[in-house]
Length: 297
Image (cartoon, rainbow, N blue to C red; front, side, top):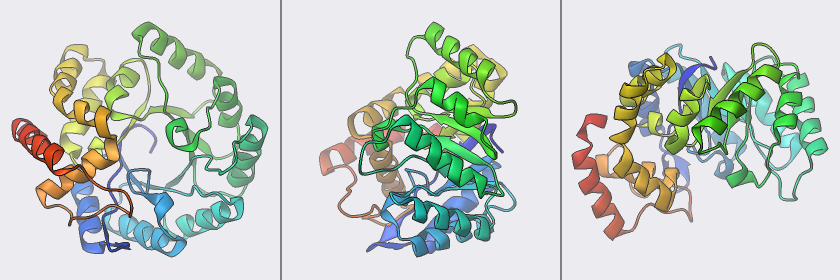
């Protein structure tokens, strides 16, 4: 399940409760597009803002609506005991994999992060994806730590956050990691604006926010990049430049949630309080931009 396109949908909320019908529709749209996997309750899915019960409900809904497409859900939490309980819940709900970022209030050390993953993977019956998301967690994975973690039981993939902008350095990093990582563990890229750079450098999977709302375009982009069709990949990515500008200003979550509201895919507000979508001026600008990006639908 850790190759191709993994689409990460929103978890739309109404007054803090999951909008079950709209969440289900989002998952069904991904299933209809036949994405390679679905990343329910990633950062885009606002997992950190949901209760254990809400996360279990959303995971069950996702698995049920996915029509057999593998579903991965996040088990990240500050307390390791909660991580273990969330892992149990996820497996009970029928997921094909779990996603774990080292969430912590206190800054973590490499040895502490290793022990966290060691404890969690020892109890799993499904593969785990290591989530390197320093922008959110504040923890920077070294390549040495990622390599060491890849040899733990049940580790299936590594979801990279920070990635070299220079193409030569990008290829070098991917080659270095793949040469040293445990056999069978895939390397994935997150951060939509750097996705094609990661795939063209040799990553195996795109963990995609864009794919959660526009799976068909994202799937085509991922396949072109994985095929090594540089010309077509560049063409497809270049067309997304106006959208990436909003990403750079506001972050992917707020932008994707704003697009979903403009489309009527979700109600407004849909994000967990106090997060908000774009203000009126930027929303109008985004709406105008989307009219020029009608090919995404």
